[in-house]
Amino acid sequence: MPAPRTVLLTGAAGGLGTLMRGLLPSYGYDLRLLDLRPIEGEPDAVVADLADKEALRAAVRGVDAILHLAGISLESTFDKILRANIEGTYNLYEAAREEGVNRVVFASSNHTVGWTPTPREGDPLLPVTAPRRPDTFYGLSKCFGEDLAQLYADRHGIDTVSVRIGSCFPEPTTVRMLSVWLSPADGARLFHAALTAPVRGHTVVYGSSANTRLWWDLGPARALGYTPQDDSEPFAGKLIAEQGELDRSDPAQAHFGGAFVVDPPIWPH
Ligand code: NAI
Ligand code: 15L
Image 1 (tube, protein in one colour):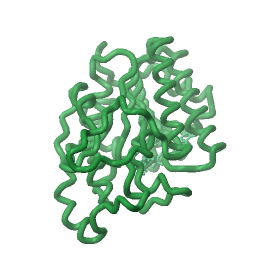
Image 2 (image 1 turned 180 degrees about the horizontal axis):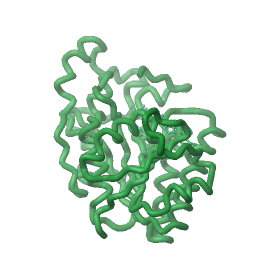
Image 3 (image 1 turned 60 degrees about the vertical axis):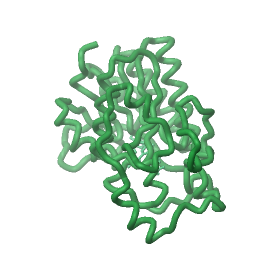
């Protein structure tokens, strides 16, 4: 497969989309942008809802690959999650199938395994083959996205890398994030690897930097050619002084999904 050049970036107005709009062009990509919301300074961006099948078909036409970030990124009502994340991702894959786009990178999430207890010292890192334990309707929608990707790989030959992103923000802001932080620069490295790796079918990887306090196995991501350069550890002293070490007697601190396991999920950023 030749390296993709023109990539549709959905969710381009969001936090991660904005970071990737800044970072991915240096890898040689020509980004086509799509979001529900207009993007200041980007008059050519497609403003469309994932529910709009015609707009999606037009948006994917002629691209080499899709980086699918659009959707509801936190917990919400089931109806809203159903429309944006479940039906929306289905609509995107249908558009890809109809237009012959056969490489997708799907923004999955650590919340697919959010109810998994975090490892204690000496425990093995969580493999991507561990049973999924979604912590929310949001996490459940990401499990659906991964299964949809598997179906479209098997049935239609569309290759997907599902990246179970940890927390991709400029800096970690909680003690939990010291374990799951994906620096924006490593995020771009990982998405680039996922867009270009010569893998067929559906591949699931965890997405984080090479954090000293890592909870999961980065082997599958490294196998794509991803070499993380960052580690959250320089932020540890300040965060632990402010917030204390993780308190495992608190359910919101004892699971991969952090505060998402609490009903309703409360998130401090
Ligand atoms: P965000 O909420 O900042 O951005 C999501 C974007 O999707 C927004 O600009 C929104 O307008 C757009 N969108 C929502 N519904 C849409 C629809 N129906 N049609 C078209 N566009 C729609 O979220 P963020 O942080 O940028 O995350 C991007 C993706 O990565 C999301 O899918 C999220 O679930 C996933 N993710 C992000 C993580 C992170 O650390 N930022 C961690 C794990 C997963
Ligand atoms: C996610 O899936 C969310 O989209 C993001 O906003 C963060 O909350 C992240 O997980 C996290 O777990 O820190």
